[in-house]
Length: 395
Image (tube, rainbow, N blue to C red; front, side, top):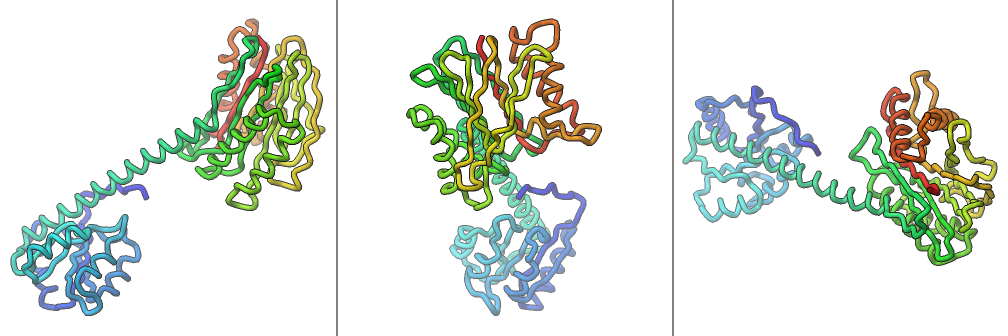
C-alpha cells in the first residue's frame, strides 16, 4: 500500500481503548489541556476496537489499556498491530519498567503510565508516535519499491537476452518499451541464436497479461526455446514442446502465449516462419519494397488447443534482407481516427520511414527509433501494453 501524505491541518484521529469511565474522562481532559487538535473516539473492549479499525487508515493512533474485559497482557496489543495500521501507544496504570520495554518489543510505539502523564506529555507522545509510524511506512514502501525494481530488472534481463550470433554479416537490433503502467512487467520476450551449422533462429513472444508471474513464464519460455534450438531438436517439435511446458508451468488455465519464430538457412536465401497466434513479421526494404509476411499458416497460440497446429511457411529472402518481428503492443495503439494501427497501419508507417533519401541500412537503429516514435505520435495515448521490436538483417 502506498503511503498517503497526511493533511497537516487536520486533527489527529485517536482511538482510546479503555473500559474505565474515569480514566477515559482523564484522557479527554489531558487532550483538552494540550496544544493538539484531536478527533477522539472511544472503544470499551478489544472487540469494539477491532470493529472501529475495520479500516486501519481511519485512525492515526490507538491508546490501548492492557487490562480489558476481553483481553489480557499483550493479547490486545498483538491483535491491533496492523502492518499498515495506526501507531499504538500502551496506556496503563501499571508502573513496571520491564513491562514497558516488553510492550515496545512487541510493537507498541511507546508505553505511558496513566498517573504519570499529563496533557502536554500525552500530546507529545501521540504526535511523535504518529510521525514515527508514518516514517516507518514510508521506509517500508521505499524498500518494497526497491525490491520490486530489482526483481523486475532480473526478470527483464531474462526476457531480453544477448543474442548468440557468430556470423559477422548478421545484425541484430531490438527495442523494448514499457506501456502506460511502467511498474507492471509484461511477458514480452525475444531471442536470436545461431546454430553450429550456421542456421539463424529468431523468436519473439508475448505472454498474455502483466505482472511477475507472466514475466517469469516468459523467461522460462525464452530459455526453453534457446535450449531446444541449440540442442538440434527437430524444428517441428520446438513449438509443441514449448506448448507442453506452458501448460504445465502456467498458474491459470486460460493463460496463453503468442509467438513467432523464424529460421533462416545458412545460405540466407530461405526462411521458415511459424506463427502461433502472433502478428506476422515484416520484410523491410526501401519504401514500397517493404511487405508483411503472410498469415495463411497462422496457428493457435501456445496453451490453446492440443499443441499440434503450427504449419511452417517457406519464404524466399531477397538478396538484401531485413526481418522485423514485434509484439502486439506496437500495433494496438488507437489512432486519432479511432482506428487501431494494426498490421496495415504498421506497413504504411514502415514504408514511409524507409522511403527517405538516405538508405536506412546505414543507420538501422535510427530507423527503429523513428518507427517507435511514429507509433507513439499516431496514438491518442501511450499503449497500455509493452512493445518489443526485433530487427534481424544481413549487413
